[in-house]
Length: 176
Image (cartoon, rainbow, N blue to C red; front, side, top):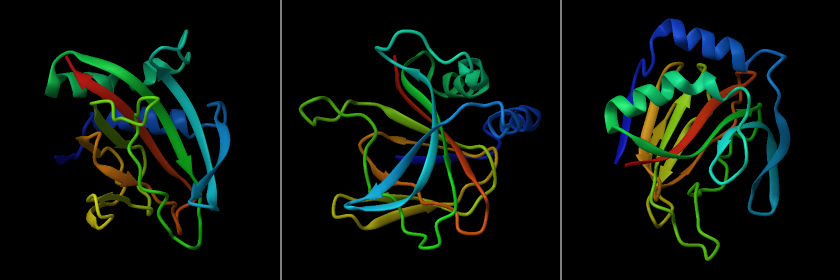
């Protein structure tokens, strides 16, 4: 299941969210993105919520409109993780390594759904794969669009080539 929702939150809230996460006051942590052995590009991340960890980011409330829209679709949810990812241009355009988001310590998958919300228009699509790593769907980031999919579907983001930043919010959850 891969479903796409345009205007997942109202346009005014889209603007507030995008202005906030793109501001210089919003704190990010830096790390490299790898595809196998090679470093592809740089990414900034801000974890808003992580189940099992004490506290949450003081910026967690910014995703309340997204959580409300998810709950409108699924009812009550168990939230596992929410984070903002910012990727920067990479001329190769290679996707990141196909992955699933949540795994147990033994490598088993944790049942969940993923809501991937695009904060801005950007190149750098998200790719979805079958078990043989064939691309089954490609979604291009458009501001206000959310993609909700089963957490066991392999997927990979890609860095933009022509736009300066690709902002996406990743929410991992399970309907109650």
